[in-house]
Image (cartoon, rainbow, N blue to C red; front, top):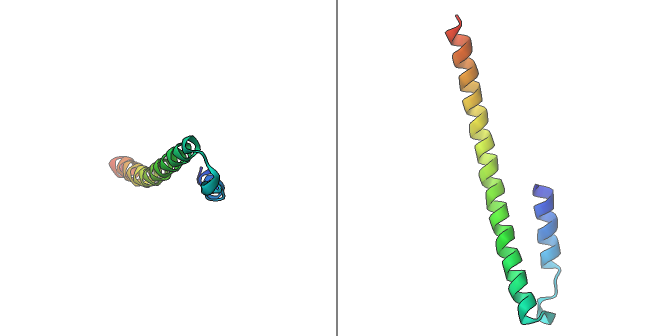
Length: 68
């Protein structure tokens, strides 16, 4: 997903904003806001993956320690 976000950012910033109609400017603003939200969600997802790994390792350790 990170590659897609980076490609989209690159594409959005290559748009010549001076030649856009008002509707196109609104659409571009909406696209940029949506992209920012997607980037934030990807960051949250990465953090959750890290937390999940820690919890999994704790659960595995508890299982191993409990079986002794």
